[in-house]
Image 1 (cartoon, rainbow, N blue to C red):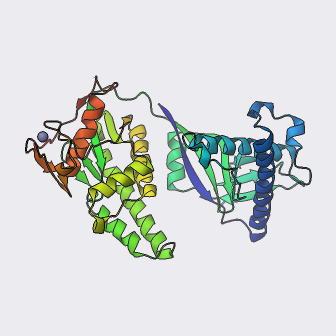
Image 2 (image 1 turned 180 degrees about the horizontal axis):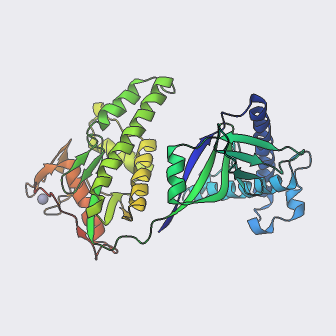
Length: 370
Ligand SMILES: [Zn+2]
């Protein structure tokens, strides 16, 4: 199983003049990108393999090299494809994307990380073929995360360049996925970030983290700090769950689209308590959990999110009234338990009884019947 991980290295060790030169390049790159986008938007998007000279030469008043113009044309194509893909179910929402000139995706034709160790630095990021004979060299210091990836995987020749950092990518191969059949369901909530079908819960301080974010003024530094703290807490919770992974072969979560998740929360919480973990945090959490699965050769699957918090895991009765806050009590058979754990059990059952679940069985180590 192969996957890609990336790591950012700061460009802050460069001189101010180099950094302002980089900014100038990125701004021009963005402008050229937008010329391509406008043209492709009007006249149709070429395929990346048919970027002929006359297309690459389209922006006439630029000093960017043909090579970098080609990179910009490719990025323009990617941006158009991405926006169409994103809104493929709601085509009326599609509008022409705009490149902000803040970042560039470049390959080895433009950028190269050169291992030239000096007393102070570990390597140099060398940029060439930009245009106007500009050559830029940025001193780079490696860090723990970078070094870890460098040991685990093979560094790829693609770079994301911004004014502040360069992002480097690694391909990591951890071998085949585990072949066992132990499966767990994970429900995401506000009282506990993760509730497992075996009754274990993680991240019981989630609500406090979210309240801290909501208390801060929107967009303030305090709020940014609170968000960072929550992200860090999410990472810790993922690490706590990873400890279970030696017994687990499959993790099942709910695939929640924005709408579904918000509407689910509206139903779940009383009006005065209407709060959410937030879409960004939810996405971050699932991404981290999925990455942890990949690293540990654990399969990661999603199920559709309908009524997982209202369905009785014992008799199958579906009723909004089955759940009141954190308490689940089936109105038909009386089955009771923690509502999030019930949700996790339903998530797992949904997968196991679905098309692809047949070979798995629930992971029940430490299972407490509720
Ligand atoms: Zn029931």
